[in-house]
Structure formats: structure tokens, C-alpha cells
Length: 352
Picture 1 (cartoon, rainbow, N blue to C red):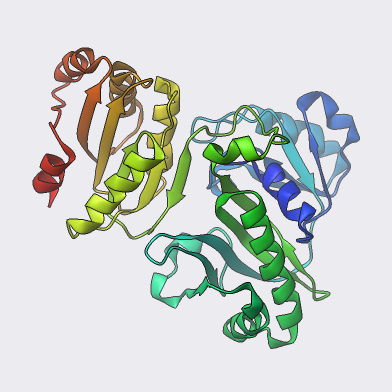
Picture 2: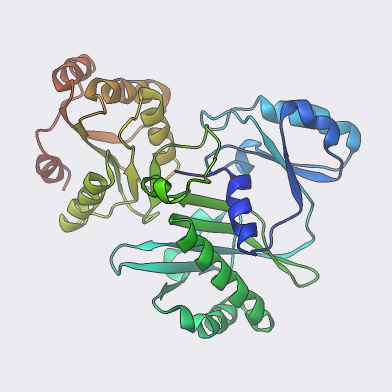
């Protein structure tokens, strides 16, 4: 489950990671917002800044008009019910920082870059700082190495706090991804989480009875594995999703993502998955591997058809739908000349 920015920042703040002063508000609460301020659309998707979802407002008289436009601005299919108003920070430098699960080493991986912000996707992946966290007693040494890489050796003690506290947040909240982009170094020497994305494992919800996240957060697990990967995957159930990714790797291809649409995915939710995948630049094929139990194959088929209609330049689709309402799905897809494969092995043989 992908959290909204303010929800992610609430989790970070609870673990003593510094965040900007801010306030979440609905459209009927505009009177409580004072300029100068940064307004941020609260939608569960990246790329907001380039699409008008982040606006700096310096005049009080402009707040209402700007905010109302943002409330009515759809971003990749998502319309916000809330905006986040935050203080304007005096930025000295922006870095990239994240924790994710390295499935090859079965460890939590720290990933960082000296250039953060909206252009992070264009950075050379070989230039990133990468370290697996295998022993939480090594935080001080890890912070020293990261400070040296980022060329802020005098801030190693602050980086150690960031690493320790984000690691605690990651573990305590059953995270799949914790990303701070940008991690801001302010002109007065503070390190602050300027923006945050967190994906939590919704299968662990039974351990977190206090979770009360927004209903419009995505109800599937979408994790980027390799931004340079050419193969995107969609599956239902964490086991099948992991097996699909593993099969792609075993065939010599590079998977770009892990995506589990869950057990109750509707056509609209599956369509949202396609929109997320199309934010990745190098995809040339999307593998859809669904075993229909609770999930209905015909619902997935309708989402596939809608995606072809609504999303320009959709990559090639390689589809396996098996189980609940498979025959209906096959008939629907046949009308649009979209063949079904009998197995994942047949898909991989076809695209390899």
C-alpha cells in the first residue's frame, strides 16, 4: 500500500526524522492557510512537480485560487481530497535517500545520490551509493561513508540519525520502500525530509491495528526494482508476484518492478497499476500474470482494454489469465486481438 506524502511524513516524524512544518487541509479549510507556503497535491503517485501538483504561493491573495485549481487537477488519474501546506525551506543542497528490500541479498538496502529532486530518474544508476544494512551496530561507519560520498563530512552525525531513524521506521512499519527525495540540506545546516514516499506491506496490517490511511491510497504493492529494467510485471498475490519476478530474472531479462494487485482488485485499480508502470521510461513489455480466485479475470481483461484505450504508447502486453471467469476474459480480449498465453513460461519464451 502506497501512502500519501503527509502519511509517510507522519511515520517519519514519529521516528524522529525531521520534516518541514506543515498542515494538511481539505477544500473547506482554506481559511487556515497563510502565505508564503508550498502547496502539495496529496495523490499516491510520483511526478507531481512536473504536472502542477506542487506550487509555491508567496501572496496571501493567491492561496485560494491556486489551491482550488490544485484540488481540481487530476494527476495520472488521481484527484486529491487534501493538500499539504508546508513551510518554504532555504535549500543549500538536495540529495536522494531511500531504503528498500534487496531481494537478491535478503537485506535492507540503503540507496543514495548526491543529486536529488525531480531529475533523479535521469541519473546514472552506477553513480548511486548502495549499501546493504546487515548489522544495525554499523550505523556510525555507514554514516561516515555516506557523508564522504555526499561531500558533507561535517554532517556525518546528522546522517547517522537519519539512517538510524529511517531504519527504525522501515522495520516498525513493515515497509517495502522508504524514499526521501529530496533529502534537503538547509542553509543553516539541517537535514530535512523534503518529500517522502513510503510503501507498506498491506499483508502486515494485522500487526498494525492503528493504521488509518487514506482510502484513495493505492491498494496494491508497487515497488521499483530497477529503473533501467525493460520488463514490467503485474500479478496477484505476493507469492505469484515474486515468482513472476524471479522467472523474469532466470530467463535473463531485467524486471523493472514488483507489483501485487492483491486479492480484491477491481478494473479501476488494475488500470491504476498500468498508469504507475508507464511512469517508468524503459519498459518495452508488460507481463500480466493473474490467477483468478477472488480476482475476476474478466475484470482484469476490461482494465487491459481500458488501458489500451486511455494510455498512449502503452508497451507490448504479454497476458496470462487463469481461473475465475477465464473464458469470459478470453472472449473480451479476442475482440481487441489480444491473445492469451497458457503459461508464464510461454510468455518468457516469446519475449526472450
